[in-house]
Image (cartoon, rainbow, N blue to C red):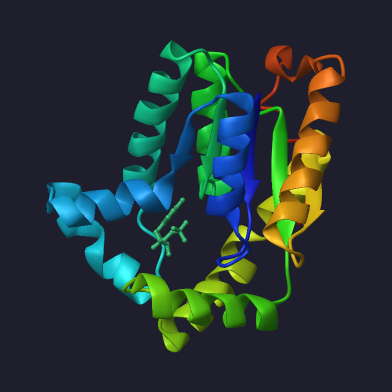
Length: 212
Ligand code: AMP
């Protein structure tokens, strides 16, 4: 099973990705966790990205895609399944992720879209801030991250819909109920015959929704 997750901050994508990872016994690749680990270890990457994380800005695509390439290569060696949590966040990342996955012969079966409204997300993130003390969980930074999600990340949902791999799930419910729906939807997908996407002659994206 190969899953990408597209979700606003606070929708529970980390929690649900962990459930998917355990259920299908596949690696959980979380870009935010990888970046925070670099920051904690004060690596060169960590030093380069700390400011972006603290401000709720997206990290440059080149850094993200290098992490994704390494992680997907490791996932391939571990059996080929994965749940990618936090990537892609931009159309360029979506395209680059597709290219890398295609090279490795492991394009996604499902793009899971978790939906929730902003007021609920803000409430959850402020609650998390009290517990986790993440440097990007202040109200101002949270509002900025939600704006970035709507402006830059949300448009990629349409592309996955066009590719026929989009699975939307309402994330405004208790995590356990959301998890059950996700697992049911993924199991149903897994039972379907494989799509011909891996052998598509073009890059598989179809026309850009805005016509450009
Ligand atoms: P997350 O843990 O997924 O909420 O990510 C936390 C922060 O890491 C984001 O606000 C960004 O600063 C950075 N980040 C995580 N994934 C990406 C990505 N795919 N592209 C750019 N920045 C990212």
